[in-house]
Length: 314
Image (cartoon, rainbow, N blue to C red; front, side, top):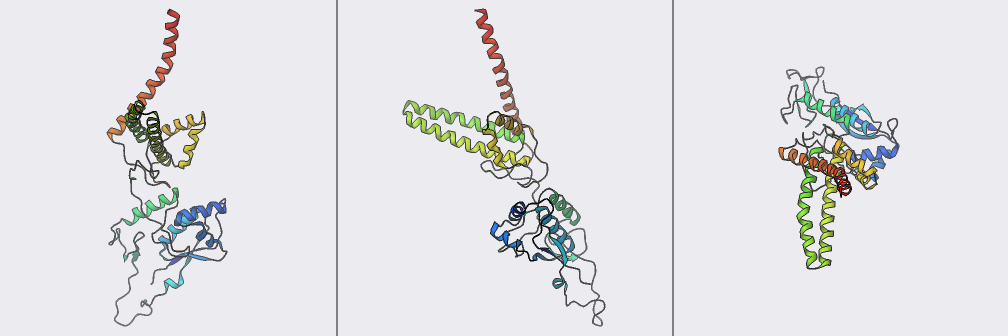
């Protein structure tokens, strides 16, 4: 018998407790498309978002789209199920029986006999499906942008993610953990000290030139620090815009402390895969930064007490 094929249909209905704007935003991110194309999905008529799917593939698309807020449904794709292959009831005399033990790889859609692994891409089928189900629960998987909302996505919803994310210090993309955030901040501080020293030296030549260099170095340090902070927030699962909270008096200090304390998610989130394990250098730099903070606090408490004691003695 021909294996049943399915399609994903959407008629503009939303999942419970999901607003229209939220659903459109999630779908735009899911399909990597603009709002104009997403708006056309809500015309009121049924739209076939994806066709000619196996049951497992259809279930994966169904789960990802429902997580995004779209109340889609799975239906039999009768057109895709039509086949001219001879069946058991309509087989020419002497022809070989058609096997009913075929399967479709959930990653590359390769058709083959049922097996543990895909003979085309080499994945272990059960492990791959379990991994994608876990990712679908945490966040909708991303699919490639299509020429229109009605076109078939170029990448499968069940696209796999790398185990660890790539470290990119000078960008707002990606994730870094607590220790790496401390270590990178320590390196930034050590690197900016000689730069500020050079800029200060130019004051002897020209106050204008020295002041200009101070401003340039200060802006560069601030930009890199923002990049580090955004990646730290991404590791927690928060948007990088929350870094603006650090500008609020008192509240900003508490929020900065939380960035050092709250651990990141151990699994992939909407900002990517978790960062790789910390190296020995990262751990040493992080401990050095913590030691400097502790010594600074002790000095801030002890120095006024010592000065008061010295004044009393004199």
